[in-house]
Image 1: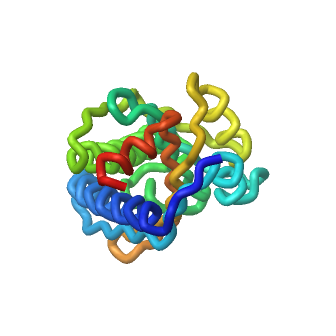
Image 2: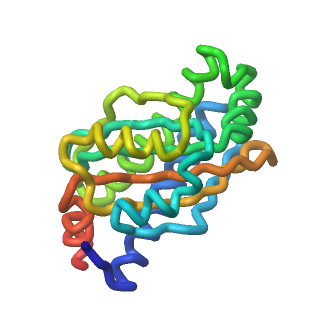
Length: 194
């Protein structure tokens, strides 16, 4: 099990805040509406603890999985409670249960996840790119198990960010999990001299 110092965790939190700011700007441009993303909690946890911290495994969630390749390989997973996914889709004028709703959630997840990882890459001089996003509605535990089992190199640590997304005064919660390939978090911290 990997553990991190307070200084290293602070650096990961700062990277998360910078990445989420970039992601909020990109999503605001897409929606043509003001967006604010607040990231009150950032934790670097062993994967089993991150899975437990993500919420009740039996709770239904919308999940957007964005596989990442390049210098920052792994997966980005955005998890939306059902009512918040529906609210986001309503802001775009689509029904969350329609094909357009799934597509909208996929694009939102793609923009948020890719913007976040690209911001990290630019700050640290790393190249990365996303594979097409996958959108699913399932129990939280099933989504997490599928992502972890589908990863050829299972992550040893997860960065868990509980976020509040505010679109034109409408608040939506989401959990953002970055599941980097083994050793990637250590490489990030090494590039920061930590």
